[in-house]
Length: 218
Image (tube, rainbow, N blue to C red):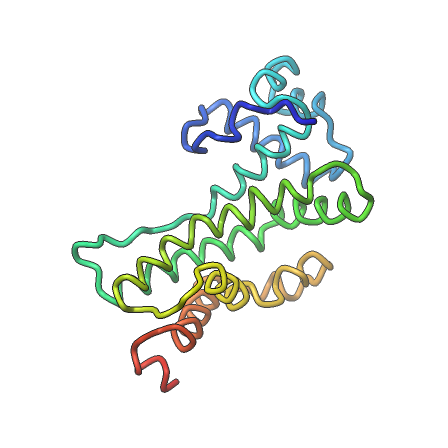
């Protein structure tokens, strides 16, 4: 069982610059080495002691958890100002979130992490699959649902279930991009236009859930 207790319940922003450097080194090694990376390799790449790694992150599983959390934190939410928010500024917040999400998901680090998680799950090796779900997709959902609910409270959106609305938003934003990148489709990676794809996804989301007839007519 993982003994990692150092960052599981911490806000990612509280990590020190040095800890972030270590996590960046770990992510680089996941891309380069896949499942072959070790705590020794991370310590060597990050120029720190293995004892420091264990102190900060616990065991290898704890370090993997931290790297997934660090990677997921790169998806940014631009929260609109409730005091002056109109539908246009709210839509822009959703677009910027979707754009950031696509940029992170289509990058080589996320692809490597997801491939590693899938291979672990298929081989029943450890808990990386559940780590990626909990600290990746599920964590993103918990960050986005309040933004969706803000739009509902402002009467821009209409839905009964936040989980269902999130799953629909995820499907419209990600489409088949993630599975195709996992399977090595180089064409889809070069075709990702994060801003354009994000705007399209948000427009389609508003057709389904928006209260404005302008979107419903499209």
